[in-house]
Image (cartoon, rainbow, N blue to C red):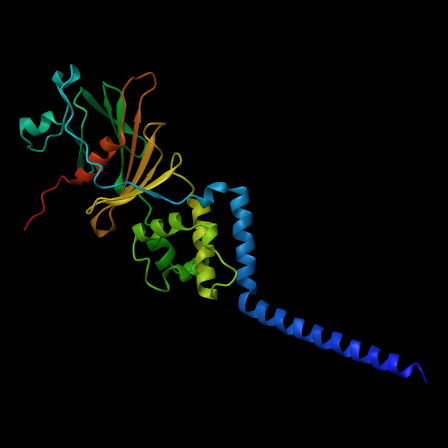
Length: 283
């Protein structure tokens, strides 16, 4: 007789445990259905960043207002400058040297004697004062957007979420989205489409890596925008620039070993702001 209340309590406890278990299963099922893939990708993103800490790096902005002053006269400035002047006046030439190749030109502030030589995949301009600029062949730059978006076949289908909302229309948009992506942006509670896109961007960032060195900077000088890899005060700098009609450029700025020459950020800004077609546009 005295055992019945105990049995009732035991049954109630068992029933409550069963209800709680069912509720937990339902919650887990709902979460797994709604956010399971996102959670897996969130975990994966942080595992990738643990193995590759630079994945957390995003471009730092270079101010377009950082315009260099005209260089002061030096002993080197009296030396003959091997320029491709394209018809510039003597006064304009005294403020810098025009470098031209592949139908494009830019102006750099150095005025010492310069020699142009072929370079793998481009052309090298070497100044007696130590500065070196390498022009990459624009036609050799990979049209990544066209490959990922327009190439038929199952191999490229996984990249389709990148282009679903129309925010990536050209190679600059793609590189910007890739290098601005970070594991910190990945959340287990985002929607499925965003989770897919974040995952692809991080995988592309791993694939692209850094061009020459870190850190990475972004610039937008109006006609020309793009990314700079490296700090000129610490070593070589690579530039990936984008012009009108999604024209792509790659440049390297460095100094040769043993030289006392220097390249400043203002020097690079001047060069990129001056980049233009050397072929006259007909009306």
